[in-house]
Length: 320
Image (cartoon, rainbow, N blue to C red; front, side):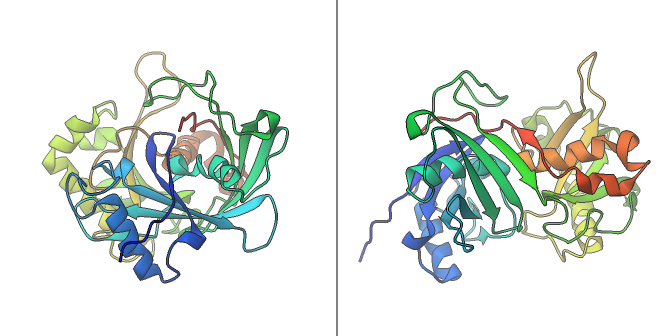
């Protein structure tokens, strides 16, 4: 017998997927996973029988509920990465892009009352334990979706959503540097293993003959390169105390390089992990940014990284 389950399809940053209220899904995690696979149309490379978009960026699910603490302005956010071509749901990671839609969804669903002007929603990421504050524009106590904020990788503009991350260090491993080392050498390549919002294995692009300015398609097409970083990622996962990463999306992998010309910051490419992310993950971007502070912060005082607990970003200009 079929049963209708309400959901809201939203874009958060450069990702999109359905948002469910926890109470509308089965209590049992295994049964819930089967429902999500059916909803997304997995396993199928096109997800033709579901609402998935046939990529890792568009096969994501957010499950939102009232906070276990009972606080009126707080919700719990459970993230599910639904495999496209396998009957598998990964409950391990979180998603910073989809996180951007949790605040508006919580308000629209009646889980959090809207306030005049802007509404601050505290979000507990169930997957990692991190606490994030989302600032949502709510003029007239209604969520505003229109605005002039633009982000790379998304066409058009929309209203901004500010995300403030706290308690972001060690969410998956309990440590800033899970291996205990600032630098590890794996298969002859120097890597930094960090756990800030997301556990990421970070390497220099030039050590692979890359610039970190290649397109996702170019990197995916280099099978030898992809096999090499996957081998390093799996060995790093063991060193980080995360076990065998085969078939798992954590830890992630990233390559970084100096930017071209007079561009600021760094050039970086992020992997999901068996394909290059076509944009940039918010959580992964925070971890990469922390690594980029190496000379300015880390070498003088490693403990200071742990104090960078509040990150302001606008990854979530999005429309319904």
